[in-house]
Length: 243
Ligand SMILES: C[S@@+](CC[C@H](N)C(=O)[O-])C[C@H]1O[C@@H](n2cnc3c(N)ncnc32)[C@H](O)[C@@H]1O
Image 1 (cartoon, rainbow, N blue to C red):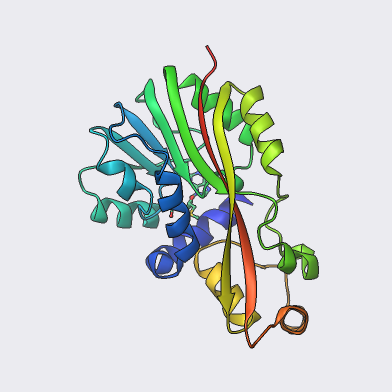
Image 2 (image 1 turned 180 degrees about the vertical axis):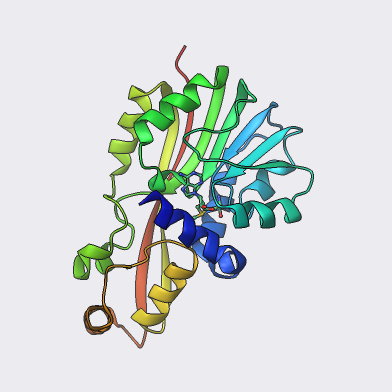
């Protein structure tokens, strides 16, 4: 699973910025919760090409940006040369802490072992460190997965489940909020292509016949005034380390 996800993200790195409309909007929404000045050192996980790094870099002196896809890191480093970039799994980031702040945007839903990862982030954080992160939760692309459940890349969790996982693994949630981002496309094929191009939802196991059937069913069921819609549910969280 991880190697498939890694190669998908690596392969889509060059076109990520062009297609990552929802992620860019989500990054701006999450950035509303960033303080004007962030204590150093700070760590960003799953930084990709730097859509959220853009908001962090101007607020913090020492930022370590990481991603497990080397092509993402290459592009991020070219765009933000003043940030230190490293290829690293979010589950085992560089041990340069203790970090005063941990940040990530549109990553956490992909974590294979989120409970262990949250605990690890807690272990590498300084006392009183902040976690400011946002990610996609249950409610994302529901209409599509209802028609094609086998395309789901992982089991989606509700916002409440995620908040409990944080609380059980070293983090006290200070505030949280869910926002729904809705996108419109001419038809299901363009919708799926847009999602595929940002590395999310790659229906590897679907054959061509099944894919055509799914897209036709989606268009028939959800087309309104010549467009189909898809919804992305995004949770933003600010938490601090439990002492
Ligand atoms: C949807 S992109 C978000 C990128 C960026 N943070 C943004 O807001 O646009 C998810 C990123 O997480 C990375 N990623 C996914 N799973 C990861 C993991 N287990 N460890 C590190 N990076 C991971 C991918 O390579 C990709 O760059």
